[in-house]
Image (cartoon, rainbow over all chains, first blue to last red):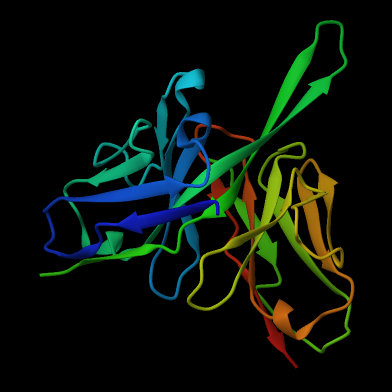
Length: 134
Length: 108
C-alpha cells in the first residue's frame, strides 16, 4: 500500500526547534518531489515548502512565512523526508502533512518540442500536530 | 505570489443537487490547477489535477474545467459522502504553491 506517515510533532516553546519526519512505503520516495502542507486549527491549507527529486536537482522552495526558518531535506536511502523547523512561533501551530508530488508530463507540439509538467499532491499522510506555546 | 480565490466560501445543498464551486487565480495559470476534498479530521484527498483530469478512483460525478484564471469544480449529483470542504491549488509557480481559502459544502 502506498502511504506516507508523519512523526515528530508535539508541544514546543516559542523560539525552539522541532524536526518532523515523513516515512514513505509502497513506492520509491526518491522518484518523487515531496511537499509539506500545514493547517492551523480551524483554518485552510497552507503550502509550506517542497523538495524536488534528485533527478531534478533535489532543490527546495519555501513559503515566505517560513523561509529562513524551515528546511526540507530527504534521505532517499531511508525513504524519509524531513521538515526542520527552527525559531518556532505561536503562529506555526498546525497539523503538518507531507505529500507526494505526482506529475503528468505533456508533450506540447511546437517549433521545438516543449514539455509541460503538471504537479499535484496525490498521496497525503495523516498529519502530525505541532503546538507552539509557552 | 499567485492568489487563489474560491467562491462561495460556504454552500448548502441537498443530496442529488448539481453543485459548482469556482476558483479564480490572480494571474493566468494555464491549466495548472488542482482540486482537493477534505473531510473533518482527515487529510485532504486529490480529486482533479491539471484542471480537468480525474484522479484515479474518484467518482465520475466530479469534474473540473477552466484555464487561464477561471476554474470550476462540478459535482453532478451530490451524494451524502460529498459533504466536505473543497480546496483549489495552483501549481503554475513551482517556486510557491498556493491554495484557495476553501469552500465548505454543507447539507441543506
